[in-house]
Length: 118
Image (cartoon, rainbow, N blue to C red; front, side):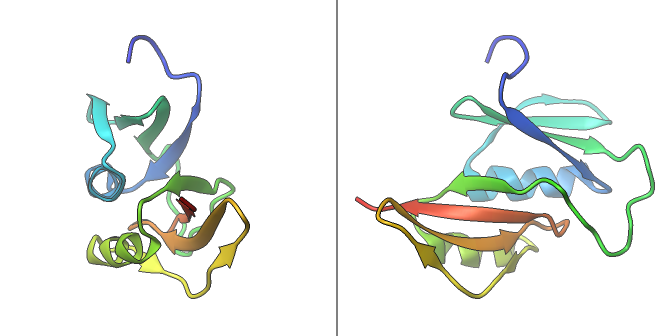
């Protein structure tokens, strides 16, 4: 990727390396840049910047950002998320285009997973 991304999200974390591992291993994102304060991940033109928090992280997290990521298999992604320290929530919802479910990353941020119909 050349230059800054045009689309993405910033996710604050108290453990940027662990959270970057979650995203690189579950969604096959690549590390584009890494400093002591941030790790920039990219895939298919989308950028997630995992940044050390400029404030104390609350014990019970709340995130106003909800990412959505496409996976080949909801079941496989749920299992992998749990293996990486995340959480898989019950329930799936479908429309004619894709099926979705929710997981949480290893910091507790909620992510919607999408599995597209063939």
